[in-house]
Amino acid sequence: MIAVNLGRTAYSEVLYLQELCHAARVKGRIEDMIMLLEHDPVITMGSSAAAKDLLVTEEELAQQGIPIYHVSRGGRITCHYPGQLVGYFIINLNLFGWDVHRFVRGIEDSIILTLADYGVQAETIRHMTGVWTGNNKIAAIGIEVRK
Image 1 (cartoon, rainbow, N blue to C red):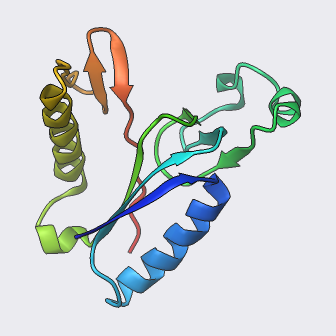
Image 2: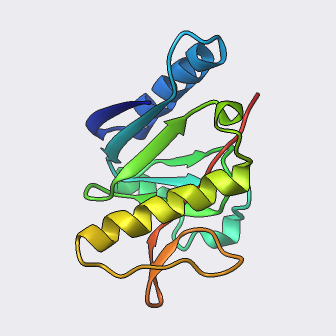
Image 3: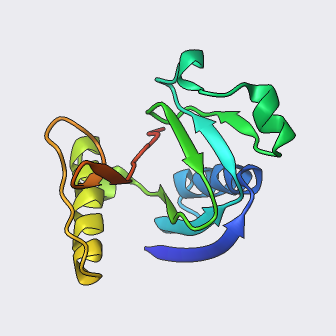
């Protein structure tokens, strides 16, 4: 697997790069990869998001220079800001012999182990996706599976 650190990158640039890499991966031109980065301030609305989930108007966000993207990944609203680590996997799930749920559980387990290395106790909550420290969600996971 290739790991690429993109530093702080605008969402629109990463979205374009994901599309290019996905097309290359489908054709077998690149290996599985993960892009690690931070985003400039942005809000993404997944396939389960509703307008009522947004607590301020789009106009207020635009005045602050915070764009909104409606994306095809699962989940509701995610706010990204500098300082948050984001990882985008572009992989062939069949090569791993994993189903989507097993893949997500593997991501959660990896996050929990990494946090433990830094002295942070974390856990999953049954029937919910993500990782928590106490009552606080420390890691959200939204994925899209294609082809």
